Amino acid sequence: AIIRVKARQILDSRGIPTVEVDLYTNKGMFRASAPSGAHSGMYGAIELRDGDKATYLGNGVSKAVRNINEKISEAIVGMDPILQNQIDQAMIDLDKTEKKGELGANAILAVSIAACRAGAAEKEVPLYKHIADLSGGGNHVLPVPAFTLISGGKHAGNNLAIREIMILPVGAQRFEEAMQMGSETYHHLKAVISEKYGAHGCNVGEDGGLAPDITRHWVYFCSFKEGLDLVMEAISRTGYTNKLKIAIDIAATDFCIGSKYDLDFKSPKKSGQNFKSGEEMIEIYKELCKDYPIVSIEDPFDKEDWEQVKHFSGLGICQVVGDDLLMSNPKRIERAIQEHACNALLLKVNQLGTVTEAIEVVKMARDAKWGVVISQRSGETDDSFLADLSVGLATGRIKAGAPCRGERLAKYNQLIRIEEEIGDQASYVGQNWRHA
Ligand code: PGA
Ligand code: ZN
Image 1 (spheres, protein in one colour):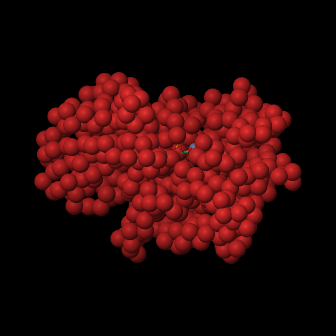
Image 2 (cartoon, helix red, strand yellow; image 1 turned 180 degrees about the vertical axis):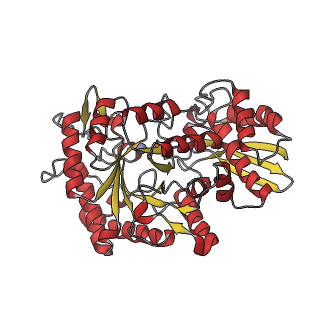
Image 3 (cartoon, helix red, strand yellow; image 1 turned 180 degrees about the horizontal axis):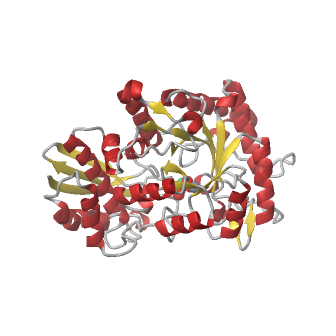
């Protein structure tokens, strides 16, 4: 049974406060922490912050910490940690609000994850195995990692409008080999960028991707191509040409103005002439998918631009991933399934707030034959839970940032350990990344 729950405020990878929980049972102490994104959006669960500008610029989480120590603790001490569903429900009932704004989704999530770890220990099984049991069983599959190589958008101080250019090592045989491919490509890219932009081009964004100042050179019709060409050059130096595919996160909501998309939204020397209509964006995507091995595009349009995203998905050119479009919200997911607005879910567990709800939305996505990407947030901690979650739910894909920086590698390194532990029975999803 759960004996004691103790929370504290720690700092995340951005140096901003977040919640950490130590949950005790007879088996020991189980620790977990909550991540945080660039913006939490209006459909996701609410991250409770103190708002007192004099302390951590308003970002303190002492209220969320107190909610755990005083309220959640009282509600769940004595419960069996194996019963994830009941623990999560107890917190939802205690909160009473739709978006968990009373206790804070950051408070609830950290407890939910810590309880999940305690549940695994109670059963004396690995965490991924316990998660697989909670979701009704199934195989343990090592996901294809989406490594962020170039960062842009709100995640970096360069001029690149789109948030991420990622590589998927679909041609690897094992996760560990995928990791090697990711690391080697990253370091080749560093050299390519250093040659073209100087060493300062190798400064990194929030999730560890390199962030050169993409300048929209005249030979390119848009800045995306400049970034993609750098990645292609790095890939060619590795010799893994056919083994690596590309995924991009456009995060178009960040630069949608009215019905237009401003590709220069971060440029101080805005020409004002780089506004594209939704139709023009579709043409850009078509051309990119023709010229580069792009297999997946995330948030190609504004989160409310349902018509364009439906149209684009219908073309069937590549996988279309819904992140800001869905915000992991079951109602938005349901609508997107009905309307065929996209065909993959980007799951950010902290937008839901509990492990149980995460398992439920993965089932929804799977029933609709969608892909599922387990995703980090730009503000992360050294918590590796997402690695076990991706294996336990056999999602086939994980997006945890660049193959560098401690908080990103916490997840990837855990996958290396899991693969080793499963041994001969381990299967890496590889070329089946789309239908794990
Ligand atoms: P966020 O970014 O955590 O800053 O929201 C992640 C993403 O856009 O996929
Ligand atoms: Zn995204």
